[in-house]
Image (cartoon, rainbow, N blue to C red):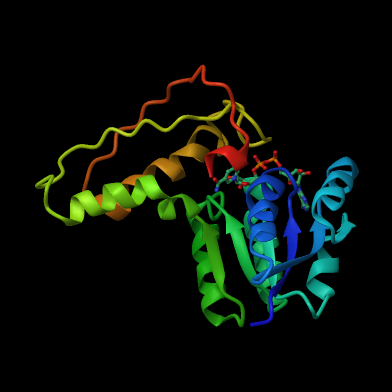
Length: 211
Ligand SMILES: NC(=O)c1ccc[n+]([C@@H]2O[C@H](COP(=O)([O-])OP(=O)(O)OC[C@H]3O[C@@H](n4cnc5c(N)ncnc54)[C@H](O)[C@@H]3O)[C@@H](O)[C@H]2O)c1
């Protein structure tokens, strides 16, 4: 099978999460474009992962060779960038959360149903080994009916422009998408979810260490 040609957008988490994985799977993915608004991040990305750097998202969309556009930019930009990429006929891997509002999310989902490309949201943690252990334990019935779940999710240091603690934005809720996604697939959506944030004093890990 020919590898999918990828244009990566947003080179913070995009480098650590996405490029790192694409490089591990060269038979499936070839990084062609690296897009960010920050020249230093572009230079670092190109040095580490190859491809052509650009500040212009449209360069990825105009390139007929690009199959997949990935988006790891601040949440407020998710819907507009993803809509453009779907409209250009590309597959889209959009980092969680899908959008900043339910209305934007609904609009994106509706567009994706009419589009040539597939829209996929970056809920990759549900495929991790610890999630499978929890899923198997619930499915086997060994735990009986689950009434309550306690999830300790280390927040690996505050990074990124979405994460300072302004509750009026997608800040605190940003990590809650992971919490919700860890709990709902194994336990179903009927459980009340109570979340409490605790700051961890653990040293921040590199993405490569905790994948
Ligand atoms: N799935 C996961 O485990 C996981 C982990 C971390 C972050 N994320 C997601 O990744 C996204 C980014 O998070 P982050 O921590 O890297 O944020 P960040 O703010 O550190 O980085 C975002 C990057 O996007 C660039 N950018 C902003 N607007 C752009 C545009 N229009 N075109 C091109 N580049 C643009 C910025 O210059 C910056 O380099 C968020 O949606 C976050 O939820 C997911």
